[in-house]
Structures are given as C-alpha cells and as structure tokens.
Length: 284
Image 1: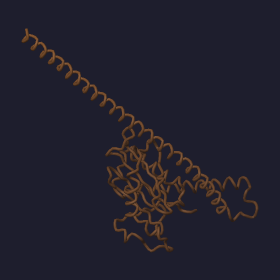
Image 2: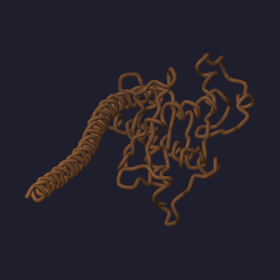
Image 3: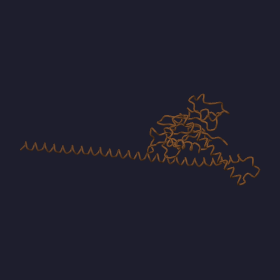
Image 4: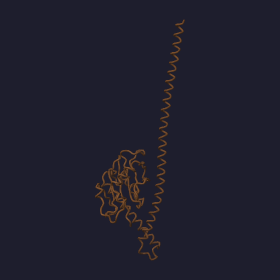
C-alpha cells in the first residue's frame, strides 16, 4: 500500500514557533518518520530519484517563512474540533491546513496555539485534518489522563505526529483487509484474478479516498464561505458599534455646544438688560 505522509508541521504560540518537524519525502526513512534539522543545507539525504525544482525549494526554512508571511497574518480562530484549509496558494503542489486551540471567546490570546500542516496535494485530505484535530485535542486535554501536551519541543511534536500518521496507515490497511474479506465472501475474485486481490482492493481504496477528497473539498469550501460570512458579519457588527459610539459622541458634543450657546445667549440678554436698566436709572 502506498505510504502517505505530511511534509511539515509547525506549532506557533504568541507569534513564535515553539516546535516543528519536517518529513524528508525523498529520503530513505521509514514511514511516519519525521526529521527536523536547523541546518537546512545538510538536511537532504541522497534522493532515490531526482526531485523537482519545487521539491528542492520545500525546506523547513521555506515552509516556516511561508507560514509566517501567508498563514499567520490571516488566521481566523477555529472553534471546536475543526480544521481550516488555507485557500491562498502558498507553493505549487502543496496544500496547507491549520487549527487553533485555547481561544478565549473566539479570540486569539498569548496562550493560543496555532497548529499548521503542509503536505503534498497527493496526500489524502483526511490525513492533515485528522492529524491537526488530534494534535489540538492533545494540547487541550490529554486522553491518557495526564496534563495537556505543550508541544514545546521538536521531539515531542515529532513523536506524536509520527504516531498519528502510523495509526492512519494501520487504519487504511485494516480497511483494505476488510474489503478483501468482503470481496472474497461475495465471490468477486472468481474471474481469474485471484492473484490481484491487493491490486484490485488498492484501486477500490483509492477510489474511496478520491470520493472522500471531493467531499472534504466541498465541505472546506463551504466552511470557508461560512468563515468569510462570519468575518463580514463581525466586521459589520464592529462598524455598527463604532458608528453608534461616534453618533453618541457627536450627540453629546452637539448638546454641549447648544448648552454653551444657550448659556452665552442667556448671559448676553442679562447683560443687555442690565445695561439698559443702568442707562434708564441714570436718565431718571
């Protein structure tokens, strides 16, 4: 079965990357392995086949810069167990997803963690979504009964990412085996194709993943439209509140202006009456 993996995962808190991990796609590493190295120039091993120009550009530093320049400034707090796909193009052949944790009333605070995942477009979309969802859950509450994970080290992040990806592959294998058993029980391998059970099942599994990708795409587009609508509504509400504040301030300013004018007029009338009375008594 084809091995799927993500390319880069980064955890950001208070506008600072606290941990990251990088998967060398062309390197001779085991499935689920995550490599992180600050020396990017020495991070590539001898590839099995010549990588493309885009793949050569896909280094940890490049991913980190793209996240800082494109993702972080446009992050919208994600409530619940949801993941957002970045609609803005970041790099040819790659998709980017993110989620947030520890939001306060839907607002990002200094304790909020931003989980970002970048992977090739050939990777099933369910993998980065599942990965970020589980990382978010681990950051908010540890299912093993311990304290929530801080993900403040590369080793801790790499270990959890690798475990989640390995579990994803095991789930795919279990699903494939179940398909084989169902097909055998239904007699679908009786036409001289007994030796191609795995090949036929992998094709069927790929078709399932394709349909799943299409459904996820539709859902993410719908979620993006809803997010944009929420953003516009929030902006409209904010503008309405600001307009109301300015209107009240202007009303108060006009009231004080009228009060000063009336006061000035009142004392002017008193002064004129006083002057008239003074001339009147002097004349008498």
